[in-house]
Structure formats: structure tokens, C-alpha cells
Image (tube, rainbow, N blue to C red):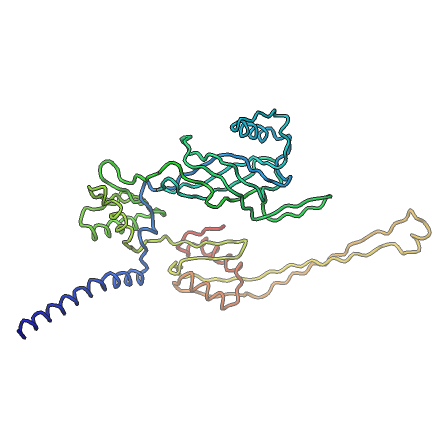
Length: 385
């Protein structure tokens, strides 16, 4: 009895250890991936066929406090006549003179997978000469796709993040009062399903940033997880994956692929914004040995204006006017070299830090990086915004 109990006890211990290792393995692997700079495939790209769909339509916003389209706007009057005719109201076109309505364009984004009854936000923009659509209500309007099919219906109060008030020549305006949003104002009427699997049972994974090395790493990672031959890199942007034959398992298969992580290979790039003086670069962007000598030349011009005629001449004769003469003084200040230093092979991050310690301004750093790129010592793409 004791021997059986001991065996049973050892079995429970072994089983508990196996479960603990199985639970700890993914966590340890995730920690290793994070430490190595790995990124999930979900964040690196998408599956071909999964994309958003653009919808557009036009409609009428009513309830405006005299800030709508002018009566001379023929399109607004025609739209109002069409709207009223749907309720068996026949109003002559010349009798529609209200400035409490505005004709608007409506845009929305339909997700790749949508069901009937889903709510989406819509953007409302004035197309006429309305001064403001604040406080208005969008009347039910159809949102269509490129195939002219109605996929959603939009209606609801318009929220505008601005205002415009004018009266007696005074004007106060904030932001753009002719642009608004109807939060969850559209209801999906036609279901949409993203078709990511081809007829031959393959799915294509597309990278956001085309890179041959990253594409090969993704294919190798998928083959490691699902077996050899599961994926192949077609080009720097596309990885073709063998999908399961059972369509019911496709979503689980896609989720498991998106959870995989690889270390993307990023091209060295230095981004410079001359308007704001911002420099952004990868920490491992390399610079060959280079010598930097950066000086400073300052030019200043001061001008003094004096009158050449005495005051008593102007009193004696009104036709005599004083002549204004400007005397300018130009000063050139050429200070000593602010930076004169030789750098061995280093990185952009180390160079920028060294220049900061030398009290070199941000715009001077930009000029130095541009000169290093021209000298061929900066091994990265220089992007100037």
C-alpha cells in the first residue's frame, strides 16, 4: 500500500512538473522574443484580402440656426425637393429658401469583417456655402461602395469641434465648423467577409514595409512552427502560406500565425525635420571614421535714419520737406571653430550625444549630418522632411 502510494505521489509530482514546464515555456519564449527585439507578425503586416472598405454618400443636415447654404445653392434646393417628395410633399423649387439646411458629403470606413447592425462612425463635410453645421442633424442617407451598392445607412446629430459667429461685421471662428462627425451614426446593412484564402488553399501574408531579409525570416519562423514547407517567401513583400483544408480552422490558423514573432531587419535611415529641428535615427546606424570642423559666421546690419533738413526751413515754406537719410553699418563676426573633432567608427546616436555635449545646436547637428552624408561616411538613407 505504501509502495503504491509512493508511486502515485511520484506520478503526481512528475505530472505537475510537466504542466508547469508547458505553461512556463511560452512565457519564457515570449520574454526571450521581447528581449531580442522581436515583433509579432500581426504588427508587421496583414493577410492579403483583409482590408477596409471606403464608403461615400451625400445627404442633408437640417436644424441649423440660419448658418446653412444660401438660397441660390441649386444643389441644396434640389436635394431638399427630392427629400420632401419621398413623403408625398410637392414643393416648387423656387419655394425652398431656408438657410437652416446644408448639403453635405458623408464618408465612412467599413471594416474588413462586418455584420448587419454593426455601428460605424461617419464624417460629414459641407459641400455648399454653409457657414456652420454645428447643432444640425443628418437625415437618413445611403452610404455606397465603389460598386454603387448601399452598404450602410447614416443618420444622427452632428458633432462639430468648432464654431462660427458673426454679426455687424464681427467674426469669431474656431477650427472648421463646416466639418463634423456622427459617432456610430451609420448602421451596416450588408454583411462583409474578408476572403483571405485562395482557391488553391493558400494565404498570402503581406509586409507593411517591403524587406527581403524580413520576408525570409518570417517564412523560416512559420516553417519552424508548422513544419517544413508550410511557408515560402515569394518576394520582399509577400510570404505564401499553406492553409488548413478545413475552412472552420482558418481563423484559428491565422491567429496562431499572427502570434508568432520575428526580429525585423530595418534599413538604416536618418529622418530630419528642418522646420522643427528634429533628428530621428536608429541607435545602430553606423558612421565611418570622419573629421568634423564646424564654424560660425554671423552678419549683422544696423541702420540709423536721420533727417537732412532743419526744422526752421519747414516752418518758412510748407512745400519744403525733410529728407530722410538712412545710415547702415554692417558687422561681420567670425568666431572660432565651435567643433573640430575626429570620430572613429561610431553610431549616429553617439555622434549626436557627443555634439550635444559640445553645445552644438540642433540645426547645426542637422547641417553636420547632411555634410557627413555628402562625404559618404553616413551609411543610411537621409530623409529630409
